Length: 256
Ligand SMILES: Nc1nc2c(c(=O)[nH]1)N[C@H]1C(S)=C(S)[C@@H](COP(=O)(O)O)O[C@H]1N2
Ligand SMILES: [Mo]
Image 1: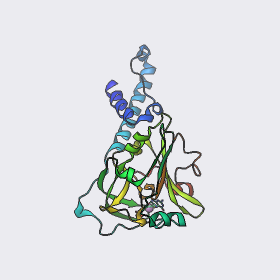
Image 2: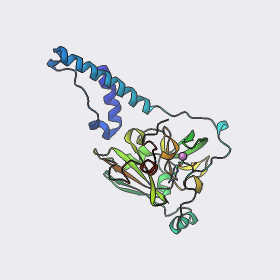
Image 3: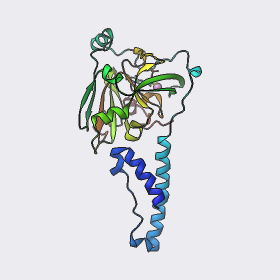
């Protein structure tokens, strides 16, 4: 069994706080010899294989495209301009005073300016955005990997989910989203400030939006104001992990 457990341990260690969440079978006890135990262990082994496959798949990269594939126009959906004087003021001053707060289960809470974010290591990726409403678009995104921001803040062991807070309100509630640490630490999960090598347009989430490339469009929170590490989503919004998840039957894990 060690050939199964060891890669899982490595993978899980890479995800930091996930370590305690996933049970590992120990394969070296004397009781292994009892036939019933052996049967149960081999069932566990199959489950290990299945969960390893699932985790490995979730680590895979989303397809990346070339510049020739870029959509001529990257349309906007949902909020196109957050209402209110506060956002208008930020937009008028080029988001010079915009801060993205990193809070919750972190060793060192942060309040990052756009200059701070641009000074961190960057990643550029050309990916396809898929909206459940039935459209797709290919865009080139540049931003800081979320893993870098979380590393700078220092995730505490109890952190299991990352909540994304947004500046816009739809109807009676603020837009928000969340993901687990597999997606939060995925190399293509970035906080993007540029679309097609230009400053992110307001309609697409200026000054900063999430790109979480293995999931559907509504997970890609725009107008980011906060990033919060939590142990549970129960007390956030209505507890289903996102604005649309709380209201209609959109899946929390919207994998593509
Ligand atoms: N803050 C915020 N983020 C949001 C939304 C929104 O209304 N508000 N809409 C979501 C949906 S449904 C989609 S498809 C994408 C659209 O991104 P775009 O406007 O850049 O096309 O943003 C997502 N993120
Ligand atoms: Mo969407």
